Length: 150
Image 1: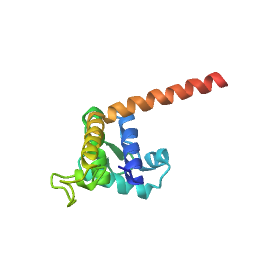
Image 2: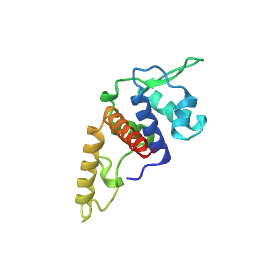
Image 3: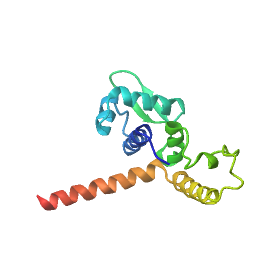
Image 4: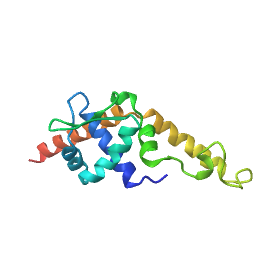
């Protein structure tokens, strides 16, 4: 499984919204700047997430984006499926009906299935709240290290 920029930036934007959860709306400009991407590209990502019911948006001067549900109720797999369409390592393990004519005799398929199951376990069990906490811990640790250097 290789994530596109769409998946990477979209997931990071969702983590930023999780960090800000309960603190009001986050503007397009602020969120795009945090990701280092254009407002237009961010809006494309957010449009898909909004359509899937993961993000709320409000127009106007005080508008912006927020999570539609608490961050502990949105898992990473849900976000990536919206942005990427699939989180499969191989096409033959992505659906109930294998697309590969060699699925029955493929010596590598058991490995792909095992790998896919582990990936799904991690993505399903990791929430935006988990990622936000990890990010805040990492950010605080880096700030502490910088303070000791200065």
